[in-house]
Length: 359
Image 1 (cartoon, rainbow, N blue to C red):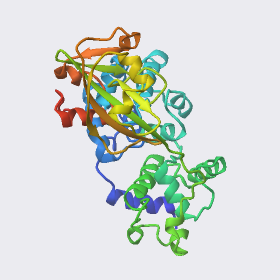
Image 2 (cartoon, rainbow, N blue to C red):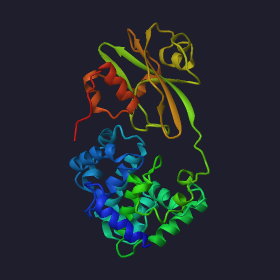
Image 3 (cartoon, one colour):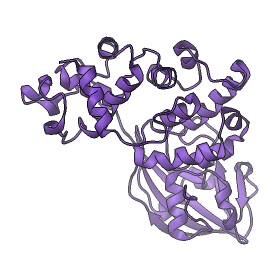
Image 4 (tube, one colour):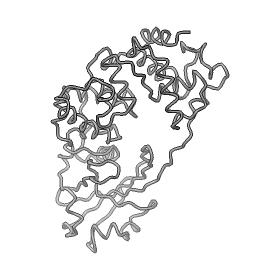
């Protein structure tokens, strides 16, 4: 069986019509690849359309203020992708006169681009013979050949890359790559794969031994950290305060509310006794009321347990910590990029916040 030929025949009949397909614009292909990392197509499509509309060329993206880009990215998560996207656009303008580089090596040299993304752009835009190996491809190959090597091991990454390159149709790498990725997305799915409608069923070793769900094999489980965020909606004379996250923690360069992190879930009575509370308010009398406890907000390596408190005060404390907060009016909140959990809170509490504009 010519695997590549079978894949391409299946792809021509069953692939999804998406705006970044059947084009060779490296900028739009790059945008789609960065947006779709850790993002479902259905979720990413409106973002792609908005980015192309607001920033039609790489120069437009490079010239945009970072806060505007982060605002447009809001809701996709993994915000380092947006920062890297902006940094890479600036590199293209500075180092390549605004023209997207045309070799695998130069594409890979851009901020935030690794082997997979470089191969995708090189093959889709320039039809260069570089095999893509993303989660879908790992899954298809692991099942097709019943490969026991963990895909998250150094050996596995090397072996799968070699195998993918060996199977690649060097004369038509763009369609081959898209076909194997699409098969993984639509048929060879992580849970309940549609084996009966797979064009490679007769070749699939995992299916023939009845162990499809055993593959792909992973060696390491991600260690998840539980964190407890106590957010303070601090009101004063019709305004409230935002915190600009500019450290090395999650959500860098986004805005959230003043927050006290505790080792475990707490109560208002215990919260006011913490060092974090004293740093904010000292001995000032304030009124505190628990407002919302949200369900656990799951990030890749962290589970966030978030509680929101309404806090009202008569004057702004003199503590130096307040210098990093921004006083805003409720109706201006849409000007700031904020994490999803803060967006949900503002929407539920009708804090001058509407939904994002539609594409």
